[in-house]
Length: 120
Image (cartoon, rainbow, N blue to C red; front, side):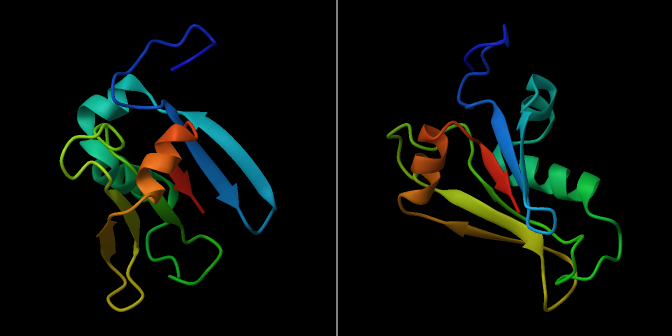
């Protein structure tokens, strides 16, 4: 991570972006070393953030519902399969936890932009 005397967390950009469409607000939050050590990669970080921030029983299509686009520490490194990213969300079919793992340019570009996750 750069600036603000923050300790470098290797493999991570060190920031998450939160976009609230109801209030038209955007907030950057630091990704803590503790979170990267306790929750593995983008999948784990995404699950933790949604668990902490989404109220139990919230409507999948309601204002309290969120979707996260996350990357892991290997994303964008050039390692095999490192172009992956994960969408984490509440399933509209089951109402339970769901994720979608995807490839392409989005994950590496998100990391290049300086973020490990974007939550909407």
